[in-house]
Length: 115
Image (cartoon, rainbow, N blue to C red; front, side):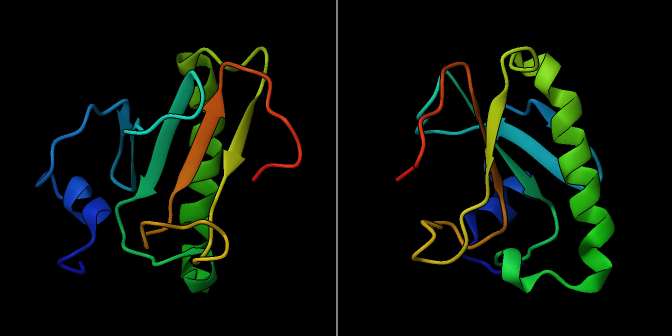
């Protein structure tokens, strides 16, 4: 775990968050700066800097995370109307925390193009 990684500290329970879902591979919690009525972050407990740093052995982890997000949509109240799933990658992609994470955004109509 990189010492400065805030998401690693959250996964290690060093920084408290309101946990909406957790299992041995991932944790889900509200974004502290929401841009939609529903805005949660989904992080793997394993430190992976960004999408480009995934290794072949991480394929099942990513599959598990995306499948779990689809199951959490109902709990989050966004299953019926839909939602947006975002993975920012590196600086030009808007990544500000260099630990792979997904933004789940819902509760309103999403415009296109983003940003």
